[in-house]
Amino acid sequence: VGYPRGLTGSEDGTIIYTAGGSGSSPFTGAVYKSTNSGATFSAIPNTTKNWMGIHSSADGTKLIGWDSLKNVWISQDSGATWTNEVNPGGTAKVNSVKFSHDGSKAYMTTGEYNETNPTTKAYRFTLPLTAPAFTLSSSTETASVSTAVSGYTIRATGGRVEQYSISPSLSPG
Image 1 (tube, rainbow, N blue to C red):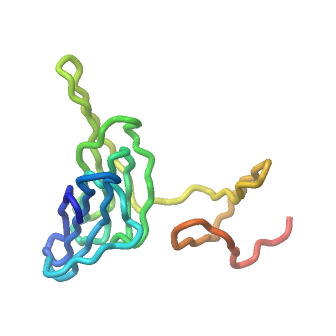
Image 2: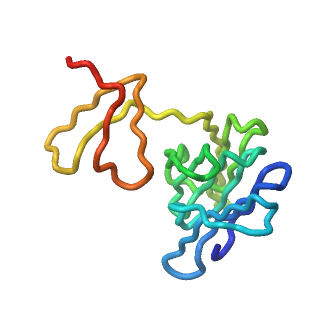
């Protein structure tokens, strides 16, 4: 885990997550998961960041965390995939995150402390997160066309999408 910066889990204590970073450069660590009340932990693939904190829903299936770059990350599938949500606090430091008991809402607070003008703000994310209309483009394009298509899904398992297909096929026009 490196330097642990978060410990959270399901309400019954069966599922436990921890996340952290390293004490030296490059300051990264993974999210680790236990499904046996902490007897053993396994790293969740593709979660290496400099985590500053993490919190789970009561059932342990949804996670929200933040990294040292003030990015907010949400997983709705026990850490298998993550969405980098826009930090509504902009460049403000994230201080804490939490889920509602039923896991339908995630909350975060931001704040900066100085003696003359301390600020604290709270934000809410409503789940499930929904993706906006997608844009298909490549790094060699000189123009980009955005098309909203409802009822279709493009799935990626992480990394760069080199190929895609849309099923069922779109009708011409």
